Amino acid sequence: MPTLLVIDDEPTIRLLIRLTFEPRGYEVLEAAEGSTGLELTEAHCPDIVLLDMALPEMNGLEVARQLPSSTPVLMLTGLAPELDLETAIPSIRGYVEKPFSPAALAFRVQEVLESEDMRPSQEAPAA
Image (cartoon, rainbow, N blue to C red; front, side, top):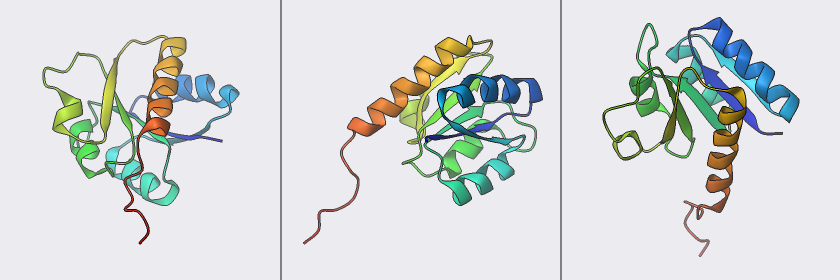
């Protein structure tokens, strides 16, 4: 069962994501702020993080910089980012503009997870 972590301060967005992904077989973890999201990432190693760009205590980019580069992140934002986030922060694999359709978000998450499965392992070969 893949694990998805949503870090968003809007309870309705977290609920929508939970209702979208749990029936698809995902375990959904939730955080309303960045620090809790970072703690959940460390404790649960989610397969993907959906991260709001505008969070109260630290913004989504600050959170993304602290996430492991091996943890794929999709940014959730009301505005299309002006910078190339995928180049700027290694963990970011793209963004989804709010408001989003649940089906489009599920498709994008699946697309990212499938591309992660196709990436070569970052581990050094055994000697």
